[in-house]
Length: 444
Image 1 (cartoon, rainbow, N blue to C red):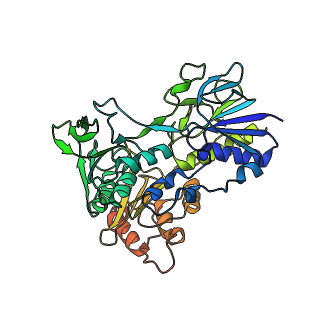
Image 2 (cartoon, rainbow, N blue to C red; image 1 turned 135 degrees about the horizontal axis):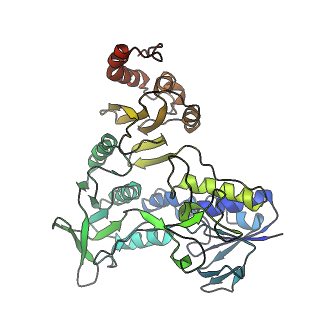
Image 3 (tube, rainbow, N blue to C red; image 1 turned 60 degrees about the horizontal axis):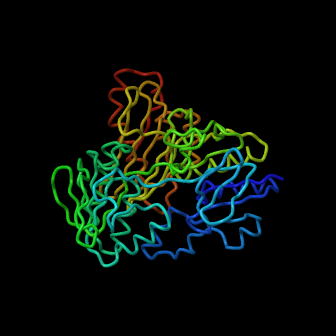
Protein backbone atom coordinates (compact mmCIF):
# COMPACT_ATOMS: atom_id res chain seq x y z
CA UNK A 1 0.00 0.00 0.00
CA UNK A 2 1.42 3.36 -1.08
CA UNK A 3 0.95 6.77 0.48
CA UNK A 4 -0.49 9.21 -2.08
CA UNK A 5 -0.33 12.87 -1.03
CA UNK A 6 -2.33 15.55 -2.85
CA UNK A 7 -1.51 19.24 -2.37
CA UNK A 8 -4.72 21.17 -3.03
CA UNK A 9 -8.36 20.37 -2.32
CA UNK A 10 -9.99 21.95 -5.35
CA UNK A 11 -11.91 20.03 -8.01
CA UNK A 12 -8.71 18.56 -9.53
CA UNK A 13 -7.25 17.25 -6.28
CA UNK A 14 -10.51 15.95 -4.85
CA UNK A 15 -11.49 14.22 -8.11
CA UNK A 16 -8.10 12.48 -8.10
CA UNK A 17 -8.57 11.42 -4.46
CA UNK A 18 -12.08 10.04 -5.07
CA UNK A 19 -11.04 8.01 -8.10
CA UNK A 20 -7.89 6.67 -6.45
CA UNK A 21 -10.03 5.47 -3.56
CA UNK A 22 -12.43 3.78 -5.97
CA UNK A 23 -9.53 1.87 -7.55
CA UNK A 24 -7.24 1.14 -4.61
CA UNK A 25 -6.64 0.82 -0.88
CA UNK A 26 -3.78 3.32 -0.98
CA UNK A 27 -3.39 5.70 1.91
CA UNK A 28 -4.51 9.14 0.72
CA UNK A 29 -3.71 12.48 2.37
CA UNK A 30 -5.03 15.80 1.10
CA UNK A 31 -3.30 19.01 2.23
CA UNK A 32 -4.80 22.48 1.84
CA UNK A 33 -4.33 25.74 3.72
CA UNK A 34 -7.50 27.26 2.24
CA UNK A 35 -10.32 25.30 3.89
CA UNK A 36 -10.61 22.00 5.69
CA UNK A 37 -13.29 20.69 3.35
CA UNK A 38 -13.70 20.81 -0.42
CA UNK A 39 -16.22 23.32 -1.79
CA UNK A 40 -17.54 24.32 -5.21
CA UNK A 41 -15.36 27.30 -6.08
CA UNK A 42 -17.62 28.42 -8.91
CA UNK A 43 -20.46 28.88 -6.40
CA UNK A 44 -18.67 31.39 -4.15
CA UNK A 45 -20.58 34.22 -5.82
CA UNK A 46 -23.92 32.76 -4.70
CA UNK A 47 -22.79 32.77 -1.08
CA UNK A 48 -21.99 36.48 -1.33
CA UNK A 49 -25.33 37.18 -3.02
CA UNK A 50 -27.23 35.39 -0.26
CA UNK A 51 -28.58 32.62 -2.48
CA UNK A 52 -26.68 29.92 -0.59
CA UNK A 53 -24.80 29.42 2.65
CA UNK A 54 -21.16 28.37 2.52
CA UNK A 55 -22.05 24.91 3.85
CA UNK A 56 -24.46 24.56 0.92
CA UNK A 57 -21.59 24.66 -1.60
CA UNK A 58 -19.74 21.76 0.04
CA UNK A 59 -20.78 18.75 -2.11
CA UNK A 60 -19.98 16.13 0.52
CA UNK A 61 -21.00 15.66 4.14
CA UNK A 62 -18.22 16.07 6.68
CA UNK A 63 -18.14 12.35 7.45
CA UNK A 64 -17.58 11.56 3.74
CA UNK A 65 -13.84 11.96 4.21
CA UNK A 66 -13.46 9.58 7.14
CA UNK A 67 -15.83 7.03 5.59
CA UNK A 68 -13.66 6.97 2.47
CA UNK A 69 -10.41 7.02 4.46
CA UNK A 70 -9.29 10.36 3.05
CA UNK A 71 -7.05 12.12 5.56
CA UNK A 72 -7.28 15.92 5.58
CA UNK A 73 -4.56 18.30 6.76
CA UNK A 74 -5.33 22.02 6.86
CA UNK A 75 -1.88 23.53 6.61
CA UNK A 76 0.41 25.35 4.19
CA UNK A 77 3.14 23.47 2.31
CA UNK A 78 6.23 25.66 2.49
CA UNK A 79 8.67 23.50 0.54
CA UNK A 80 8.89 20.09 -1.11
CA UNK A 81 12.01 17.96 -0.67
CA UNK A 82 11.73 15.78 -3.75
CA UNK A 83 14.89 13.80 -2.93
CA UNK A 84 13.53 12.63 0.42
CA UNK A 85 9.87 12.67 -0.71
CA UNK A 86 9.07 15.00 2.16
CA UNK A 87 6.73 18.01 2.49
CA UNK A 88 7.62 20.74 4.98
CA UNK A 89 4.50 22.32 6.48
CA UNK A 90 4.10 25.74 8.06
CA UNK A 91 2.70 24.38 11.32
CA UNK A 92 2.53 20.61 11.40
CA UNK A 93 5.08 17.84 11.21
CA UNK A 94 6.66 16.91 7.87
CA UNK A 95 4.64 14.59 5.63
CA UNK A 96 6.28 11.84 3.61
CA UNK A 97 4.85 10.46 0.39
CA UNK A 98 5.33 7.66 -2.12
CA UNK A 99 3.47 9.47 -4.89
CA UNK A 100 2.69 13.18 -5.00
CA UNK A 101 -0.02 15.02 -6.91
CA UNK A 102 0.36 18.78 -7.21
CA UNK A 103 -3.06 20.41 -7.58
CA UNK A 104 -2.18 23.86 -6.26
CA UNK A 105 -4.54 25.90 -8.45
CA UNK A 106 -4.16 29.53 -9.48
CA UNK A 107 -3.63 33.03 -8.15
CA UNK A 108 -5.21 36.15 -9.57
CA UNK A 109 -2.91 38.43 -11.56
CA UNK A 110 -1.31 41.59 -10.18
CA UNK A 111 0.85 43.51 -12.60
CA UNK A 112 2.82 45.77 -10.30
CA UNK A 113 0.41 48.71 -10.38
CA UNK A 114 1.25 51.50 -7.98
CA UNK A 115 -1.10 51.17 -5.00
CA UNK A 116 -2.24 47.61 -5.83
CA UNK A 117 -1.72 46.52 -2.21
CA UNK A 118 -3.97 49.19 -0.70
CA UNK A 119 -6.97 48.18 1.37
CA UNK A 120 -10.08 47.52 -0.69
CA UNK A 121 -8.04 46.11 -3.61
CA UNK A 122 -8.33 42.38 -4.27
CA UNK A 123 -9.17 39.57 -6.65
CA UNK A 124 -11.61 36.72 -6.22
CA UNK A 125 -10.39 33.12 -6.23
CA UNK A 126 -10.35 31.63 -2.73
CA UNK A 127 -12.60 31.41 0.31
CA UNK A 128 -10.27 33.94 1.95
CA UNK A 129 -10.94 36.32 -0.97
CA UNK A 130 -14.68 35.92 -0.47
CA UNK A 131 -14.39 36.74 3.23
CA UNK A 132 -12.23 39.76 2.40
CA UNK A 133 -14.73 40.96 -0.20
CA UNK A 134 -17.48 40.83 2.43
CA UNK A 135 -15.44 43.26 4.52
CA UNK A 136 -14.23 45.45 1.67
CA UNK A 137 -17.67 46.06 0.13
CA UNK A 138 -19.69 46.64 3.29
CA UNK A 139 -21.59 49.91 2.93
CA UNK A 140 -19.88 51.08 -0.27
CA UNK A 141 -21.48 52.62 -3.38
CA UNK A 142 -18.92 52.45 -6.22
CA UNK A 143 -16.45 49.90 -7.53
CA UNK A 144 -14.02 49.46 -10.42
CA UNK A 145 -13.34 46.09 -12.05
CA UNK A 146 -10.11 45.56 -14.00
CA UNK A 147 -10.47 43.00 -16.77
CA UNK A 148 -13.47 41.99 -18.85
CA UNK A 149 -13.78 38.23 -18.56
CA UNK A 150 -15.77 35.59 -16.72
CA UNK A 151 -14.51 36.38 -13.22
CA UNK A 152 -15.08 40.10 -13.79
CA UNK A 153 -18.71 39.47 -14.72
CA UNK A 154 -19.18 37.32 -11.62
CA UNK A 155 -17.85 40.15 -9.45
CA UNK A 156 -20.10 42.67 -11.23
CA UNK A 157 -23.17 40.51 -10.59
CA UNK A 158 -22.17 40.07 -6.95
CA UNK A 159 -21.82 43.82 -6.49
CA UNK A 160 -25.06 44.55 -8.35
CA UNK A 161 -26.90 42.31 -5.89
CA UNK A 162 -25.99 44.89 -3.22
CA UNK A 163 -26.72 47.94 -5.40
CA UNK A 164 -23.02 48.74 -5.83
CA UNK A 165 -22.28 50.46 -9.14
CA UNK A 166 -19.43 48.97 -11.19
CA UNK A 167 -17.16 50.35 -13.89
CA UNK A 168 -15.21 47.88 -16.04
CA UNK A 169 -11.75 48.80 -17.36
CA UNK A 170 -11.32 46.56 -20.42
CA UNK A 171 -8.07 46.57 -22.37
CA UNK A 172 -9.56 45.10 -25.56
CA UNK A 173 -11.85 46.81 -28.06
CA UNK A 174 -14.72 44.46 -27.22
CA UNK A 175 -15.84 42.46 -24.22
CA UNK A 176 -13.61 39.43 -23.54
CA UNK A 177 -11.89 40.23 -26.79
CA UNK A 178 -9.16 37.61 -26.41
CA UNK A 179 -11.80 34.86 -26.42
CA UNK A 180 -15.01 36.05 -28.10
CA UNK A 181 -15.53 37.26 -31.69
CA UNK A 182 -16.52 40.92 -31.88
CA UNK A 183 -20.20 40.25 -32.60
CA UNK A 184 -20.44 37.90 -29.61
CA UNK A 185 -18.63 40.35 -27.35
CA UNK A 186 -20.90 43.19 -28.43
CA UNK A 187 -23.92 40.99 -27.74
CA UNK A 188 -22.73 40.35 -24.17
CA UNK A 189 -21.97 44.06 -23.74
CA UNK A 190 -25.54 44.96 -24.70
CA UNK A 191 -26.84 42.51 -22.09
CA UNK A 192 -24.57 43.86 -19.36
CA UNK A 193 -25.43 47.49 -20.02
CA UNK A 194 -29.09 46.66 -19.52
CA UNK A 195 -28.32 45.93 -15.89
CA UNK A 196 -28.26 49.15 -13.89
CA UNK A 197 -25.01 50.31 -12.41
CA UNK A 198 -22.62 48.64 -14.88
CA UNK A 199 -20.44 50.76 -17.14
CA UNK A 200 -17.91 49.33 -19.59
CA UNK A 201 -14.88 51.34 -20.73
CA UNK A 202 -13.10 49.70 -23.66
CA UNK A 203 -9.44 50.15 -24.66
CA UNK A 204 -8.80 51.42 -21.16
CA UNK A 205 -6.24 50.18 -18.63
CA UNK A 206 -5.35 50.74 -15.02
CA UNK A 207 -2.39 53.06 -14.44
CA UNK A 208 -2.44 53.65 -10.69
CA UNK A 209 -4.48 52.98 -7.58
CA UNK A 210 -4.99 56.12 -5.48
CA UNK A 211 -5.36 55.76 -1.72
CA UNK A 212 -6.77 57.88 1.09
CA UNK A 213 -5.30 58.73 4.48
CA UNK A 214 -6.41 55.36 5.82
CA UNK A 215 -4.42 53.55 3.09
CA UNK A 216 -7.54 52.37 1.33
CA UNK A 217 -8.47 52.83 -2.31
CA UNK A 218 -10.42 56.01 -3.07
CA UNK A 219 -9.93 56.23 -6.85
CA UNK A 220 -8.06 54.82 -9.82
CA UNK A 221 -6.15 56.59 -12.55
CA UNK A 222 -6.41 55.14 -16.05
CA UNK A 223 -3.72 55.18 -18.73
CA UNK A 224 -5.72 57.82 -20.58
CA UNK A 225 -5.43 60.05 -17.49
CA UNK A 226 -9.00 59.79 -16.20
CA UNK A 227 -9.65 59.61 -12.47
CA UNK A 228 -12.51 57.30 -11.42
CA UNK A 229 -13.69 57.44 -7.82
CA UNK A 230 -14.26 54.06 -6.18
CA UNK A 231 -14.29 52.41 -2.78
CA UNK A 232 -13.43 48.93 -4.03
CA UNK A 233 -11.15 47.69 -6.82
CA UNK A 234 -11.51 44.14 -8.15
CA UNK A 235 -8.50 42.69 -9.97
CA UNK A 236 -9.95 40.17 -12.43
CA UNK A 237 -7.43 40.36 -15.27
CA UNK A 238 -6.87 36.61 -15.40
CA UNK A 239 -5.04 34.11 -13.23
CA UNK A 240 -1.67 32.36 -13.23
CA UNK A 241 -0.52 28.99 -11.86
CA UNK A 242 0.20 28.91 -8.12
CA UNK A 243 3.71 27.46 -8.36
CA UNK A 244 6.06 30.10 -6.91
CA UNK A 245 6.95 27.98 -3.87
CA UNK A 246 8.26 25.28 -6.24
CA UNK A 247 10.40 27.40 -8.56
CA UNK A 248 13.67 26.84 -6.69
CA UNK A 249 13.28 23.05 -6.90
CA UNK A 250 14.32 20.62 -9.64
CA UNK A 251 10.76 20.56 -10.94
CA UNK A 252 10.49 21.75 -14.55
CA UNK A 253 8.36 24.91 -14.56
CA UNK A 254 7.59 27.53 -17.21
CA UNK A 255 4.34 29.36 -16.56
CA UNK A 256 3.02 26.19 -14.93
CA UNK A 257 4.43 22.81 -13.96
CA UNK A 258 5.42 21.03 -17.17
CA UNK A 259 3.72 17.67 -17.57
CA UNK A 260 3.70 14.91 -20.17
CA UNK A 261 0.55 13.41 -21.68
CA UNK A 262 0.06 11.22 -18.60
CA UNK A 263 0.38 14.31 -16.36
CA UNK A 264 3.72 13.18 -14.95
CA UNK A 265 6.45 15.73 -14.27
CA UNK A 266 10.21 15.41 -14.79
CA UNK A 267 10.47 13.97 -11.25
CA UNK A 268 9.52 10.34 -10.77
CA UNK A 269 6.22 9.71 -8.95
CA UNK A 270 5.27 13.39 -9.04
CA UNK A 271 2.27 14.57 -11.05
CA UNK A 272 0.56 17.94 -11.65
CA UNK A 273 -3.09 18.55 -12.52
CA UNK A 274 -5.56 21.40 -12.82
CA UNK A 275 -4.75 25.09 -13.09
CA UNK A 276 -1.09 24.62 -12.10
CA UNK A 277 -0.32 22.10 -14.88
CA UNK A 278 1.15 23.07 -18.25
CA UNK A 279 0.95 20.42 -20.97
CA UNK A 280 4.29 20.14 -22.81
CA UNK A 281 2.70 19.15 -26.09
CA UNK A 282 -0.93 20.32 -26.09
CA UNK A 283 -3.39 18.71 -28.46
CA UNK A 284 -4.62 20.54 -31.55
CA UNK A 285 -6.90 23.47 -30.70
CA UNK A 286 -6.15 23.14 -26.98
CA UNK A 287 -4.08 25.50 -24.82
CA UNK A 288 -1.12 24.34 -22.74
CA UNK A 289 -2.74 25.78 -19.59
CA UNK A 290 -6.53 25.69 -19.24
CA UNK A 291 -7.75 26.99 -15.85
CA UNK A 292 -11.24 25.59 -16.27
CA UNK A 293 -13.33 23.46 -13.90
CA UNK A 294 -14.05 20.79 -16.52
CA UNK A 295 -10.39 20.44 -17.43
CA UNK A 296 -9.36 20.05 -13.80
CA UNK A 297 -11.95 17.34 -13.22
CA UNK A 298 -10.86 15.33 -16.26
CA UNK A 299 -7.20 15.61 -15.22
CA UNK A 300 -8.09 14.30 -11.79
CA UNK A 301 -9.81 11.26 -13.29
CA UNK A 302 -6.90 10.55 -15.66
CA UNK A 303 -4.12 10.81 -13.08
CA UNK A 304 -6.01 8.54 -10.68
CA UNK A 305 -5.87 5.71 -13.19
CA UNK A 306 -2.15 6.19 -13.68
CA UNK A 307 -1.52 6.29 -9.92
CA UNK A 308 -3.42 3.00 -9.60
CA UNK A 309 -1.31 1.20 -12.21
CA UNK A 310 -3.14 1.85 -15.48
CA UNK A 311 -1.03 4.44 -17.27
CA UNK A 312 -3.52 6.86 -18.81
CA UNK A 313 -2.96 9.85 -21.04
CA UNK A 314 -5.02 12.97 -20.50
CA UNK A 315 -7.27 13.26 -23.54
CA UNK A 316 -9.76 16.06 -23.00
CA UNK A 317 -11.34 15.80 -26.43
CA UNK A 318 -13.03 18.82 -27.97
CA UNK A 319 -12.91 22.11 -26.11
CA UNK A 320 -16.05 23.08 -24.24
CA UNK A 321 -16.99 25.55 -21.55
CA UNK A 322 -20.03 27.25 -20.06
CA UNK A 323 -20.73 30.36 -18.00
CA UNK A 324 -23.34 33.02 -17.28
CA UNK A 325 -23.26 36.74 -17.96
CA UNK A 326 -25.89 37.78 -15.43
CA UNK A 327 -29.04 36.20 -16.95
CA UNK A 328 -27.39 35.28 -20.26
CA UNK A 329 -26.25 31.66 -20.44
CA UNK A 330 -23.18 30.89 -22.55
CA UNK A 331 -21.84 27.63 -23.95
CA UNK A 332 -19.07 26.87 -26.40
CA UNK A 333 -18.23 23.59 -28.14
CA UNK A 334 -15.25 23.12 -30.41
CA UNK A 335 -13.31 26.26 -31.28
CA UNK A 336 -14.75 29.63 -32.14
CA UNK A 337 -11.68 31.85 -32.01
CA UNK A 338 -11.92 35.59 -31.51
CA UNK A 339 -10.96 36.01 -35.18
CA UNK A 340 -11.71 33.73 -38.11
CA UNK A 341 -8.79 31.76 -39.49
CA UNK A 342 -7.99 31.93 -43.21
CA UNK A 343 -9.69 28.60 -43.95
CA UNK A 344 -12.82 29.34 -41.94
CA UNK A 345 -16.25 30.79 -42.61
CA UNK A 346 -19.09 31.58 -40.22
CA UNK A 347 -22.78 32.12 -39.83
CA UNK A 348 -24.17 34.20 -36.99
CA UNK A 349 -27.85 34.17 -36.09
CA UNK A 350 -29.16 36.67 -33.57
CA UNK A 351 -32.52 37.51 -32.04
CA UNK A 352 -31.97 40.76 -30.19
CA UNK A 353 -35.44 40.98 -28.69
CA UNK A 354 -35.24 37.54 -27.05
CA UNK A 355 -31.47 37.82 -26.37
CA UNK A 356 -30.45 34.72 -28.31
CA UNK A 357 -27.35 34.24 -30.47
CA UNK A 358 -25.70 31.26 -32.17
CA UNK A 359 -22.31 31.64 -33.83
CA UNK A 360 -21.20 28.72 -36.01
CA UNK A 361 -17.71 28.43 -37.50
CA UNK A 362 -16.85 25.87 -40.19
CA UNK A 363 -14.26 25.05 -42.85
CA UNK A 364 -14.66 27.12 -46.01
CA UNK A 365 -14.33 24.28 -48.50
CA UNK A 366 -15.51 21.15 -46.72
CA UNK A 367 -18.08 22.93 -44.51
CA UNK A 368 -17.01 20.69 -41.60
CA UNK A 369 -18.12 22.26 -38.32
CA UNK A 370 -15.28 23.72 -36.21
CA UNK A 371 -17.29 25.09 -33.29
CA UNK A 372 -20.30 26.96 -31.97
CA UNK A 373 -20.91 29.69 -29.41
CA UNK A 374 -24.39 29.73 -27.93
CA UNK A 375 -25.96 32.54 -25.93
CA UNK A 376 -29.41 32.06 -24.44
CA UNK A 377 -30.03 28.61 -25.96
CA UNK A 378 -28.95 25.48 -24.13
CA UNK A 379 -27.23 22.89 -26.33
CA UNK A 380 -26.47 19.27 -25.48
CA UNK A 381 -22.77 18.71 -24.90
CA UNK A 382 -22.76 15.02 -25.85
CA UNK A 383 -24.42 15.70 -29.22
CA UNK A 384 -22.06 18.48 -30.26
CA UNK A 385 -19.08 16.47 -29.04
CA UNK A 386 -20.25 13.62 -31.28
CA UNK A 387 -20.83 15.88 -34.28
CA UNK A 388 -17.37 17.41 -33.93
CA UNK A 389 -15.78 13.95 -33.68
CA UNK A 390 -17.74 12.74 -36.72
CA UNK A 391 -16.77 15.90 -38.63
CA UNK A 392 -20.35 16.78 -39.42
CA UNK A 393 -20.89 19.65 -41.86
CA UNK A 394 -22.67 22.87 -41.00
CA UNK A 395 -25.59 21.69 -43.16
CA UNK A 396 -25.90 18.44 -41.21
CA UNK A 397 -25.59 20.35 -37.96
CA UNK A 398 -28.40 22.74 -38.83
CA UNK A 399 -30.64 20.01 -40.20
CA UNK A 400 -30.41 18.20 -36.85
CA UNK A 401 -30.10 21.20 -34.57
CA UNK A 402 -33.43 20.52 -32.91
CA UNK A 403 -32.08 17.27 -31.45
CA UNK A 404 -29.33 19.23 -29.69
CA UNK A 405 -31.67 21.74 -28.06
CA UNK A 406 -31.63 21.30 -24.29
CA UNK A 407 -33.97 24.14 -23.34
CA UNK A 408 -36.84 23.23 -20.99
CA UNK A 409 -40.07 21.94 -22.46
CA UNK A 410 -42.40 24.56 -23.99
CA UNK A 411 -39.56 27.08 -24.44
CA UNK A 412 -39.67 28.95 -27.72
CA UNK A 413 -37.58 27.32 -30.45
CA UNK A 414 -35.64 29.06 -33.19
CA UNK A 415 -34.38 26.36 -35.58
CA UNK A 416 -36.35 27.66 -38.59
CA UNK A 417 -35.01 31.18 -38.09
CA UNK A 418 -31.46 29.87 -37.79
CA UNK A 419 -31.66 27.78 -40.97
CA UNK A 420 -33.22 30.71 -42.82
CA UNK A 421 -30.33 32.91 -41.74
CA UNK A 422 -27.85 30.39 -43.14
CA UNK A 423 -29.72 30.05 -46.44
CA UNK A 424 -29.92 33.81 -46.91
CA UNK A 425 -26.17 34.13 -46.54
CA UNK A 426 -24.98 31.13 -48.57
CA UNK A 427 -27.60 29.79 -50.97
CA UNK A 428 -26.92 32.29 -53.80
CA UNK A 429 -23.19 31.59 -53.85
CA UNK A 430 -23.78 27.87 -53.60
CA UNK A 431 -26.08 27.83 -56.62
CA UNK A 432 -23.53 29.87 -58.52
CA UNK A 433 -20.68 27.45 -57.79
CA UNK A 434 -22.89 24.35 -58.11
CA UNK A 435 -21.01 22.44 -55.41
CA UNK A 436 -21.71 18.72 -55.40
CA UNK A 437 -22.19 18.66 -51.64
CA UNK A 438 -25.17 21.03 -51.94
CA UNK A 439 -27.56 18.41 -53.25
CA UNK A 440 -29.75 18.49 -50.22
CA UNK A 441 -31.05 22.02 -49.74
CA UNK A 442 -31.94 23.11 -46.24
CA UNK A 443 -35.54 24.11 -45.86
CA UNK A 444 -36.77 26.55 -43.27
